[in-house]
Length: 491
Image (cartoon, rainbow, N blue to C red):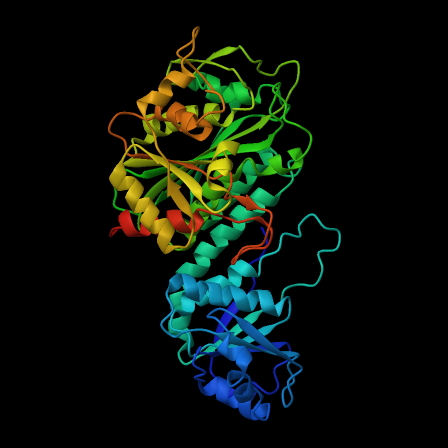
């Protein structure tokens, strides 16, 4: 896993500012109010900070903007970064402020005079999230990212406040790593091995192999991978931090490590991006790590189906009819609509095995959701208004875009088959909705359920506030927030 940039807290030492090599950051309010650290930096630089905050440039500055004074007089630092930040900023804005500093500093060691920042945990989290770079497959990964030291009045309190946010950041970075990995390095076997490594964090891990999946009757899942030389697996992660006997929340992820489309092969242009088709599984794994690292007081089980969709002489064909673990039959019209087949069997297994209080599945499922929502929001489908509202509130509080999409019986006729119980696609119209309708048939009556189509949110072609171009880690923070708000109780 990509190592998270080291972030430590130290007691404020104004005398250390002048001699620090690397970059020094001070925080100033939009009105120009300076704390003790900024005032000391101003004296060292012979009034340069005061001149900055009295300039037209600062008048135009918005919260989260960073102004940089290179090679400041009177300091050993290579730069003095000046962050515009309102003391009363909310959690998301504070996280963005930390991320802005991380982007500005590049790889240099950073000393932050953090006294004016009230939400120090979210600030540190933003620094950690934006300092990420995936370099595991480069022969020369470049210069290591330097450590961050945040000077505060009470380091022990700041460290305690940052413990959970930084644990969540670790989960986000793990998700980004998994989504970024090429398929020849993240095979289904390698993916399962990485998941097994999470036992060190306290998760109980079980990996179901193909013979066990056959005995369970997971015909839909197995049909997806039957054209590949890499074995199909289901990995289960259990975190039992809540009250004994409480039903868990089940998180189910689509883990297609590479998707050619199978016999219904995709166009060559852009197919290399299908290494990210395991984004749903990646988010589930990252969330489970975050819960374990912060010792969440909740019972949660994460299940991911791991498979590769390849064309070969043994691959599924359009027109094949396969039988699910539930016992119904599906006519495969398009082998590139494989994610819903995988999820259907894993969803049914999750309910049969764990009798969860609620179920959330995540998948880079359809291009249709990107057409509908772009890359700004994940699609949210649910059979339970209250459950959906709670998730949307959690996502909003974490600044992760999510938008409710419709379900309805009228869409069922689009996936009606003449020769089987249903078919796996319903045509171009409402493609994201018919995929969700398909999955809903594998949710038992009375079970609250959310389907998250994250095809647009899992990977982006331009940098975001919290991540460079590429994998975003979308969903880890929202799911963690939902669990913290709704499922945590005393031991």
